[in-house]
Image 1 (cartoon, rainbow over the protein chains, first blue to last red):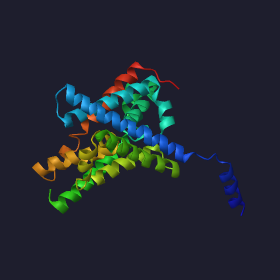
Image 2 (cartoon, helix red, strand yellow):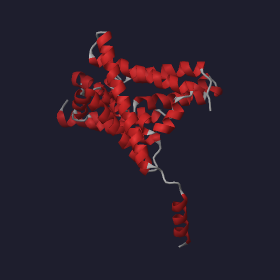
Image 3 (cartoon, one colour):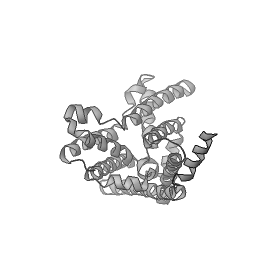
Image 4 (cartoon, each protein chain N blue to C red):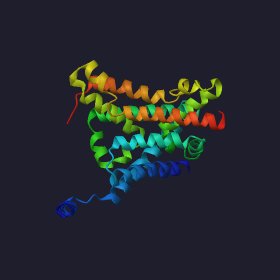
Length: 146
Length: 116
């Protein structure tokens, strides 16, 4: 009884998150990131005369570079707290996670700080991606035979 | 027209991520990991390839494309060599993003001081 009352009290006094607003912001910023990606692909393939797949590789490098640089300069944290998933889900979020880990542990030294902790946040993405890709690829090879 | 599709698809993926973030207790790390795993499963029968042909850059920017590129490189190599090709080709396409992130992070961490 007391526990339930306490829960109700907590629920009454926790500030309500404006979920619709957050969703709108995430949709708009994420969509803008998609448009920027397509725009960069078009520009690279037009000016450097390369295929679309090579241009998309260039685009990913550009976005990772921008994410790292803006995180190092200190802008990106504010933008992430504003746009949330709109900047975390795109590839910039991956760059942001690695860059902020590298910056945070820099004072512990090059090897024990940056080297050991760079993948602290972003490592789970690579590990789960590789494991699930291996399992899915295995299943597909067995089911479809290649 | 591809710009509109890019906007809608990338926005929709980010909206899904924001809904998961707001309504559960998962951290952003959980959500990005979840989306990579979803990306690999979507590419199991080549579905994500069709999405990329259709929406272009909008499908390559979200982190789901990372999972798609992992499985895509692995399967491309596996069709040549067989089951061992899965491990050989896993990072064929993804390496650019990972290498860029590692190199830029290291260099910028040397140059810039952390701010709080």
